[in-house]
Length: 146
Image (cartoon, rainbow, N blue to C red; front, side, top):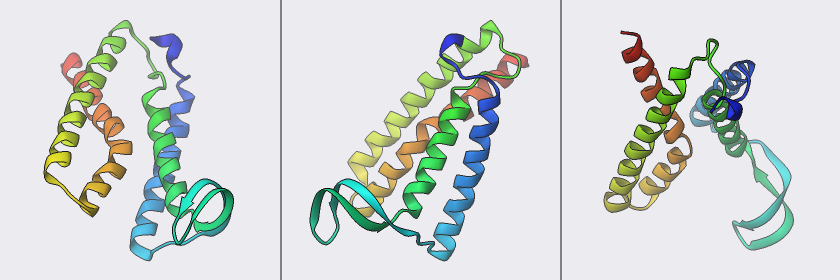
């Protein structure tokens, strides 16, 4: 599995992107941050539907989500400072557990949440697999070292 992992230094870049994303999210939620710029859109359907066109839109939420996703990705797929054979197994266990819990939460949401609540769950689902992975990986490492 080591050949698929990024070098350890990418974990720090990912942590920086996560901090930027979390700070941006807090600022966005507390102060209704707006950054309107023209962007190329494959499909845009706000007031009217546009295909392959340039539209002016608030990209603050997209930039925040991109920073969070890239940060989580870089942290999850970077090597540890001291890489051992056991970490491959711990990573696999953590990802499997995270996938199971994430799927169960999604199924619950599909069955019992509707409207905007469900849309919020879908947005959170962009990051929940990674967040659950980090929790399970940390717990697996802690259990292994105990």
